[in-house]
Image 1 (cartoon, rainbow, N blue to C red):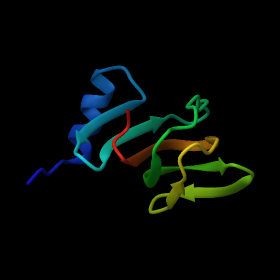
Image 2: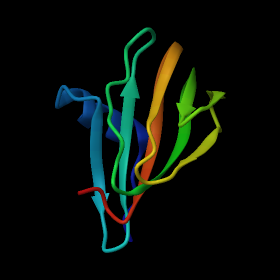
Image 3: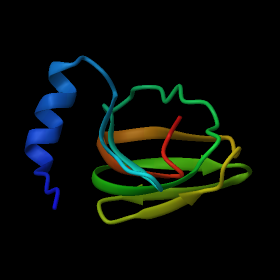
Length: 105
């Protein structure tokens, strides 16, 4: 079994000076923690993998393709592979659990 604490993951991500920390990789999926602070720009590009976001904290909007929705703690968003997507209008520091399937390459 692998178990993780969000506080520990956030500390490791911050210590590595990056917005994204991949913390687990398996045969069929990978998991990561993505962080964007209030007002920060999301510069990610489309991925080759399907992706699921689970918002752990913060508030923002996300656009996937031509659809936009507001997200906050507890929101879950599916992004199909190849889809253009961005978080924006980040009004509270955003911390998002990310699931890639297959694992992010």
